[in-house]
Image 1 (cartoon, helix red, strand yellow):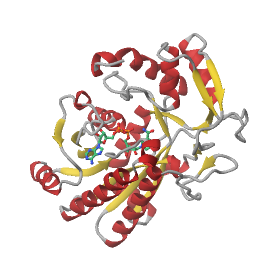
Image 2 (tube, rainbow, N blue to C red):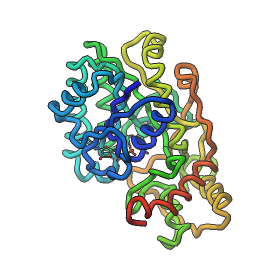
Image 3 (cartoon, rainbow, N blue to C red):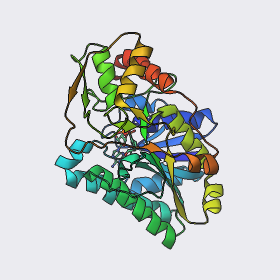
Image 4 (cartoon, rainbow, N blue to C red):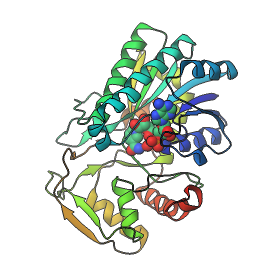
Length: 334
Ligand SMILES: NC(=O)c1ccc[n+]([C@@H]2O[C@H](COP(=O)([O-])OP(=O)(O)OC[C@H]3O[C@@H](n4cnc5c(N)ncnc54)[C@H](O)[C@@H]3O)[C@@H](O)[C@H]2O)c1
């Protein structure tokens, strides 16, 4: 199959492009390089440009009339930045995605997979969330994701567009061949911070929030190896029509997680075990907007995609550490 991957120069997009190739498919990357590095595109078919550039999307379709589906990952993704720059987030993630979907539909490219997020879920007492659970997107970023879920649902109901929304939990780790991974200079998420503390690039790792109603007071997440996330996309494009047929609706939402909740303290313990040394840890109050967290109920992905995560938390941590050693050679900065 040939698959258009918007945001294919990014972290998850580049790993997904690799997984598609591994399964014998051909990714066609569309990315503006707003944040993703050109080095992650490698030798793939690549169009540098904006998802809302309709003429460009038409040119891609004309040059690749055999595109079977689109994986729409291009987005702005930094939560605190979305609080400071709501215009840029709503413009890029909402208005531009809307243009893309309408153009895809006009071109008859009607299979769309959309990258959504577990950050949409409202806090639940058990922390294990199913797709129908109440949502409470807590930031402009999360609201852009929720809005596009609703847009897709409405467009799929009214047109030939068909949509599978994948709600990713917490992707970590890197490409299995260490060709791409986290590229932010100072990663804000927890594992990136741990790797920096472990490599002496910061004094200590700070646990933000130790009085949450979890088993040890720290936030709970569902960390999933990015390679597993990538493989879920391969399944979803391969089984696209089957999934839509079996749900009996023109669009559907599927959690992409491991099904295991891991607290921050548990993550630190696993990290120290894999790293082989302890990491200096300090504790601080939660940051504004910090969520207690959630982990995925994975019944729907198992049933519809025949997919479950295969790699362990330790595998993902080892992969992130290995990428930390390698990334300077690819990115030019530590
Ligand atoms: N990383 C996570 O933890 C996570 C969790 C849940 C959902 N997601 C979603 O997964 C997707 C991929 O995330 P990621 O972590 O790989 O992010 P990323 O920033 O590495 O990748 C996004 C890519 O989109 C490109 N892009 C942005 N705006 C564009 C535009 N208007 N036109 C063309 N290209 C554009 C960027 O240059 C970048 O390469 C995003 O939609 C994100 O919201 C990510």
